[in-house]
Length: 544
RNA sequence: GCGCCCUUAGCUCAGUUGGAUAGAGCAACUGCCUUCUAAGCAGUGGGUCGGAGGUUCGAAUCCUCCAGGGCGUACCA
Image: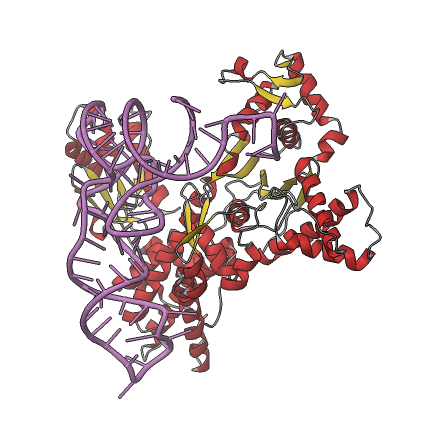
């Protein structure tokens, strides 16, 4: 039992004695030390119920509360009626001990043990290299997967793509024109074709392989297929550099091949939600409370994205996942309400589908805003970014902010002043610890030796221990809210507390007992930093 | 017009789901290396939490309205 569950239990007992139900017990860490380790607002919540002053109720709760030498040593009432609980210290050192015992496992939980999750992200069509815009979604997606795994989910990382349709025809045609250019023909390259240098590279590769054999080839299939292959290879390499791999690449085409698209249309039609108008097939969203109907199949016979997306989500639900997450950029915000409405109209449970929207990355370079567009080629690729600042900085930048906020990515700063990046601050704490542990071994001290943890009583030591013990709750909160930046902030604070401890408390000294206790403390700190960075996909270097 | 997101220190952002005196990093200024890594620590200055109402013991946080910004609002994805 932890101190928190003990307090909850005691408060619950109080409520039962008073015959009060329907009140949720909330415990939180007070901001200030003088307010103890845990605080409850129960008395204030009950004030209206019992028609008594909060402080009076608080006194009553205090009188009924059983102190326990292993958990709560003292209770105080403060402010408008807060009840502050002070840890006895025993549980604190116990938790520290358990960090040392659990090691790499510390922070993991079985909250969602036995449950499965499918996370769809990146999902860029193979028309060009991944950009910084894709990078945010990629890093967020992978990190959310890592967090879900840490709380027990079995996770499938999935990339959904479409290699048919207009975009891909334009891609093939773009490559063909560049190829003809290499053959010395003067060509007129349209503005709305893919302008990037990578198109020329693909054309060059085709030229080197085929010479001028395709001079009169008007069918773009070969060019399109070559381009898709080259681009996908490139995308997969970029993903690998970022430190993960997808379990499934799901081709939209298979939805057609397996008849899933027709099934959706037929099922919606059965429910009276489909109509033919002006040569197109419409999904009657207006019947479901939306403002306007949506086209599912254009008059040209080509479906709009909504139709396959609907079929895909039905497919995902049928695969039986407990949790289905879509990670989209803000530009896709309009797509999901209709899609979810269709899935719901078909009788499926959409509550297990969670759509996460990440806001745009605004890229600035030299004070100029750079608009990222694959088509126009004035983008900075993820690979270029990683070349400049490395994987750790790249991941950290994408994770440090709430995904609801626009991310301002100052490329100039990231490139030239990367030394000032906060990621190094955290990594530095880890490297410092490794260095001290190394020195201890050199001096013949075994850092793993049994230590008297209760001798750690300095303020800096206590603050550090307290923060360490909040790691599991942080991981859980970060995971269930799909908010990696919470863990980032936690680690930054942890690094701060460690650096403060370091400047005030000497670890290796003449005091043998104290040295051993402090070595144990920094080992626990190293474990939490390493585990945390690992969840973010960021390395924890031994030396810097 | 409508929908989603955002507005907190000069800049970039946190703020534990409604709690106690609103925090951090940059930037500016001042100190601290003979001792385990100075990529560090300590300190100073900096705020009408966009604005106005409301909900209640209590609001940066929830509701309504208004103002600014971003993204959508296609028979593009």
